[in-house]
Image (cartoon, rainbow, N blue to C red; front, side):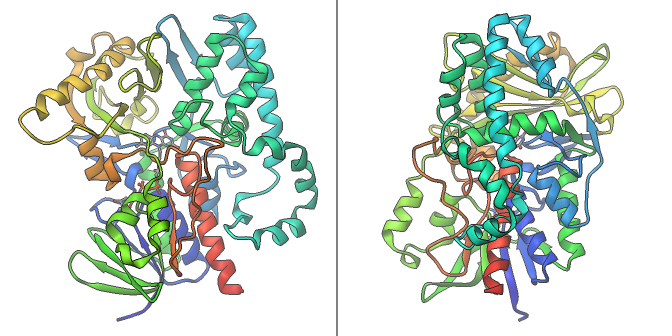
Length: 495
Ligand SMILES: Cc1cc2nc3c(=O)[nH]c(=O)nc-3n(C[C@H](O)[C@H](O)[C@H](O)COP(=O)(O)OP(=O)(O)OC[C@H]3O[C@@H](n4cnc5c(N)ncnc54)[C@H](O)[C@@H]3O)c2cc1C
């Protein structure tokens, strides 16, 4: 058996980023992915000539090599990249009373907002200005230089003394919620709901639960680098990461489900696959979720009960209902690609089915659908509890998908007459294809209520990456988690 330096469980973006960077630094890296397709929540799949994103379709700065998006920086480091199509407005938010086109550029965004609420637009400018100050202070410290242990401090002091000084007056806001800034600057209820929606789209939590730097980066980066879509869809990003891994000698094994992490005397020594194959490794990185790692991959005896209990008590965001459709596109020449529909002003935006996200990426990249057709992906939060594959499953599936159809009809009124392919996914589908505990979107750790665990674990030589290790579920955050983990390991090797 050849010894692997680093064995990564899972080929989500967090896993592929850590694997690619470690391979780039000369480590012998193998990624074991349970499924036949790489990418986890960002994998792409095809049916009858329609090429679907299973999850993310909203990206920022992938076509700009100067972008601060950690994913873009990793692709550059690996000698890779993706072709992109920029677009603006990047979305339309459909509230019960009005539709707002949402632009990357702050002045265009505010001008559109002023048509609905002139005073609210002025307040939004104050809100934005405060967060952009934080963004300006944070952006001087590149994520590619960060790591998850205390040795980051002397590195930063040496390399970025001026940037740290600039950050000092902003430090108070770094751990604060977006609501802290909103409460100081915005009274207009329309704009407060808008900010809640923006936060919810980003972190799965409203302004009170979302940390300020996350929204500061979103506002700063989308104005600076713009919003763009990768040609070929989210699968093109995964292919670029896999090419980057392999270019530097790393290996990806598909259909390689890991049954357990092997731990000896408090130290990870490799993994055992479902097939029984044992793969020894010096270091193991789990890209499986926090809950899957501690429930399925580790034995309770591998770590102190209190550590395991604390990890498993981490609250989760719900799962999803999904609709993947192929539709006829005749007469939809002016259709735009991203929409968010809030059905009821009486219900909270987080109530399952009330806020629906829609992505129609073939408006940017026509090759994703057969000629004269579009690919459509719509999704909304849905709890996993109560779902089972029994006699009621098919009826419940149709019932819980109804808000998604209604949301789509707000954008394409004759949607139902256009459908040529219809796939409905439930939390069970999501949990199965993404191998995620109860199909969760991620950890629901609200700002000010606990810290996200970082890439370290109580077990020596076992690390974790992915959306349960850093705030801000989403591609930039998980890419950052992979960078932090890789840098921590590289730093450790150097002593
Ligand atoms: C519907 C939806 C829409 C989204 N939209 C956006 C968006 O527009 N923009 C954005 O930035 N973000 C978006 N996100 C969030 C983003 O996609 C995720 O945060 C990110 O892709 C998660 O990456 P990850 O590295 O944490 O791991 P995951 O993607 O969860 O990958 C983990 C991998 O580990 C594998 N695995 C698990 N257990 C095992 C095992 N035992 N053995 C082997 N392999 C295993 C899984 O199969 C999976 O491939 C969206 C997410 C969803 C679900």
